[in-house]
Image 1 (cartoon, helix red, strand yellow):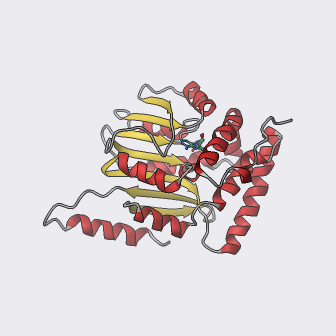
Image 2 (cartoon, rainbow, N blue to C red; image 1 turned 120 degrees about the vertical axis):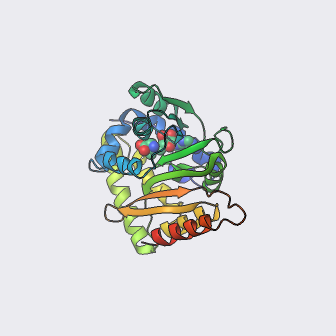
Image 3 (tube, rainbow, N blue to C red; image 1 turned 30 degrees about the vertical axis):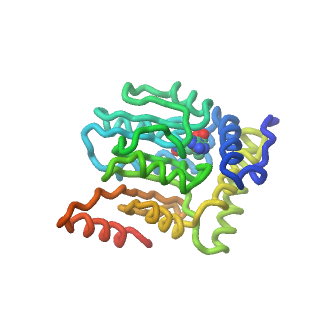
Length: 268
Ligand SMILES: C[S@@+](CC[C@H](N)C(=O)[O-])C[C@H]1O[C@@H](n2cnc3c(N)ncnc32)[C@H](O)[C@@H]1O
C-alpha cells in the first residue's frame, strides 16, 4: 500500500506553526484507520484506559465538558454516557477525525467542533471538566495549551489527561523511543504504507517533558494534582488536575486539600 503522505516529522516538530500543520496533515491521513490502529498499538487496552479516566471523574449532575483533541470521539461518548444531563463538546484540529466522530455519534448531548487546543475560543471559566486522551502532547505550544485550559475551566474544575508517560532517565527514554518507533512505525507501515504515520508518537515524546517535569509544569501553570497514576508497566499515565478555588479569607480548608492532593499523588 502506497501513502501520499510525504511530510517528515523532523522538519516540523520544532516550531508551533509547523507542528500544527504537520499534525493536521498527519491525522487527516491517519483518520480512516485511527480507531483500528489505536486498538492494535495498545494491544486492545486503549478502551479500558479511557474508561479508567472517566471512572476517576467526580459525579456532577449536569457538567459542561470539553474533550480536547477529541479525535474520533471515544472520550466524548464516554463523557456523554456518564453525564446524560451534561453537555459535551469535542474539539479537534483535523476535519477527517471529526468526520469519523460525527458519524459515530449517537448522543444528543455531544457536539463536535474544529479548533485548536491553544486557542479554543471558549469563554473564561465556562467548563466543569476538560478531558484529553493523547491530547496535549500534540499541542503546538504546551505552555499555551495548559494556560488555555486553565483559563476556560471554572475554579474547582477538573482536567483529566491520559497519555504516554515519559520516564526521567535518558536510558529509559532511549529505550521507550526505540520501542515506540518500531512498534508504532510497524502499524503505520501496515495500515498506511508509511511508518511515519504512527512513529510520530515516539517523535512527539522527544519534545515532551518527562513525567517529573510535566508535573512541575502543571503545578507552575496553577493546577493542583489530585491524582497521578502510571500503569501498563509505567508506560501510560492518568493525571487528574484541578484548577483551585480561590481561598476565601480565613478559610484554611482549601490550602489543606491542595497540599494533601499533591503529597498523596506525586511522586509514585
Ligand atoms: C492521538 S489523537 C487522540 C484522539 C482521541 N483523543 C483519543 O483519545 O483517541 C490526537 C488528536 O489531536 C488532534 N490535534 C492535534 N493538534 C491539535 C491542536 N492543536 N488542537 C486540537 N486538536 C489537535 C489530532 O487531530 C488528533 O485527532
